[in-house]
Amino acid sequence: MILRDDIRRHRYLLLFHFIDSFTFLLRFVIICTDLSAASNRNSFSSLSYSIPILVLELIGSLTIFSANILYILLRYIGTILYESDDDDICIRRKYLWSLSTLTCFKSINFYYNHPQAILLTRFGILIGCFLLRFIAFVLSCECARRYSPRGIAYAVIGCVSLIPSFVTIVIEYLHYRRLWSYRPNADYNVQTHPSHIRYIPYPITNDQRTTRWRVQKCPVENCTSDNLNHILIFHSSDRQYRPQGTGDNQIVIGFHQTRKEVAYKISSEGFRTGPIGMMGPGVYFATSLDHTEFKARQFGAYICAKVNLGRVFRTTQRGVVPPGSTYDTIYFVHPEGSDEFCVLRTEQILVWIIIVYQDSRLRFEDQSIHDRFDGSVYEGCL
Image (cartoon, rainbow, N blue to C red):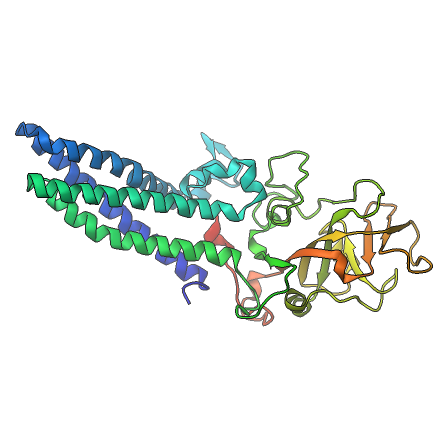
C-alpha cells in the first residue's frame, strides 16, 4: 500500500512536487508573456487580471518551488557540505531543513508540545497555496473570456496542473497520517486500549535524529513539559523525570521496557500486574528511559506513561514491602539516582505511548515488526 511503503510514497511525493514545479515555470513564463504583450500593445485592461494572477502565483507557487529546490539540494548534496545539523556554513542545516520542508514555524513552543501539528500545519499551508492557484485559474478564465487571447494559455495549463497538485496534497495527507497512526504490528483494524495514545516510530525519537550523543532537540534549557510526544521526540533518553517533592497523588512520567509481543498486547488490553519483582507484584517503572536497560527483564519495546502515584511508600532499601494495603506505590530511592517505582494497581497508569525498537540491519530477520518504518523520509520535518 502507498500509505505503508515509506520509500515508495516519498518517491511519489518527489515526482508530483517535480511536476508541480515544472508546471509553475510554464505558468510563470505564460503570464509574463501576457503581461509583456499587454504592455507593448497598450492594452492595459487585461492587466487588471494578469497582475493579480502573477501575485497569486508568486505567493502560492514560488514559495513551494523554492522550498522544493532547497529540499533536493539538502537531501542529496547537503551531507557533503554539512556533517551535522549544527554545522554553520552561512546558516545551520537545521534552519535550512525547516525552510525546505515549510516547517519553519515549528520553533514556536506550541509545536514542540504538539509535534503532530507540525506536518498538519504544513499540509494546511499546501492547501492554502492550492486555493490561491485555483483563484488564479478562475481569474485567468475570466480574463480569457473578456480579453482573448490573453489568459487562454495560462487557463489551459493552470487547469491541467491543478490535477497533479491535488494528487500531491492527497499524498501529503497520507504522509502525515502514516506518521501519527503507525503500528509496527500492522494491526490497524484492532481497537486499542483507551489509555493507549499511539505508537511513536523508533527512527523519529530524539536520539535517532541527532548526530551527537545525548543532545536534545528541545531548545528549552529547563523544560517542564509533561507531554509524552514531546518527551520522546525532543528529549534524550538519559533525561530523568523524578517526582517533585514527596507528596501523594502526584502525576509523574515513568518508563517501562518489555518484549515487543507484550507491548502489542498492552496497546490493546492494557497493563497487567506482574507476579514477581524486588518490591512485590505490580508494574515497574524507571524515571528515565536509559534506566530501563538495566532494570527490565524483557527488552525490545519502550513504554512512556503518565502514572498517578497515589499514596506512596518510599524506601532506600531493596526488597522492602510495606505492611498492609494502605499504599498504592512503592518508590525506591536509589543511592546513585536511578530511582524506580512499582505501582500496585494498573488503574494508576493513566496514558502511555509505545516505542518498538527497530534495527534497520535486521529488516528481514526481525519477524516481530510486521510494518517497518523508514524515518529518513521525514528528515527535517520534526
